[in-house]
Image (tube, rainbow, N blue to C red; front, side, top):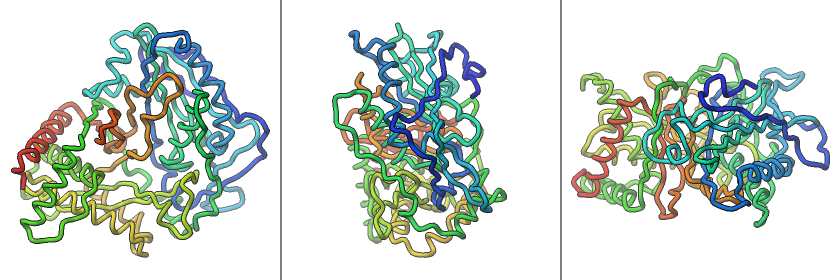
Length: 462
């Protein structure tokens, strides 16, 4: 495993241990990847960082905290044993892969500390734009050989009262429901004062594989394998909280514009409102940054791709605690010029998102059969906007017994030109959105979002 000190000034690795599942011993097992897993074989891993502030008292001494985290980890890994395994080609088969576990497999758990020069938990756990280069080192690298999970706990200043927990998960092993289920289980075991979540359901036969789609995604020549990879260096990472009032303003504006156009209003939930507003602002900021002549946008579509959880929509229904991938893409598209328009742009974006969700929920054959082609089409002219995370994952409830996270980041959005979504940590019903952009683009995005919110608040947008 590459040492973070190779690219992280001030970061010192204290130890890296391999944490195996707790007894009783588990036999060798192989889980075949289905098409929903194979879709992510060559995708970027998901990288999260949880920032914690440690309160006063001996129980919150950082060394005691690290010991409790490490001691409780084997039990959580036992319940989620596939995450200690590795993805490999299925022996004796062509173009098939499996998540393979054998006795002796383990999860890499790194403990590090930062020297505090120019950085501390208070500077990191903020919504303001920060250099991504200061946050990325808190995420470990996946060990070579097909590993799917690695963890890193980094002690932070001031006075060793901060902690950054970095988590990297390969998406082919499980989706966000599964990875955050693991984190909630580990946190509850570490805290020791609450009931453990229900165990995961580990059975890939619950979802019918679609061989043709599996082949499309698993082939080394798959056109989609290098998509959603964008420049990483030099970016800033910032968080914007859309309050319940902001989201209601979007819903009201969408309903008003539908009435003005004489069309039925799209179903505009808080999630649709967030997707639509952020897509509109992203498109506007990108248009301003690229300074494209107006005519160059004519007829060209902008695309948004986001995950749809199909657990409750398949027949038979897939258990909520299923460990694997049970998500498919939602495809929203609209003319770029309409998306970026100050008047009506938010309506256009929200209507397209609502239509994409409706298509996925209906689940007609055309939706299931065209995933790869539609992803490639969306990326043909430009990297599509996409979304990582969900308000349903409750990342701010990942409490190891020393308090809720002060801040949670999905660092990997910087590699995919995505935004991250999480519940508002204040509990007031809003949505936190994280985005990584180069400094100039970040300034434009912030201005576009502020203008859009002001416009919506004044009811003058549409």
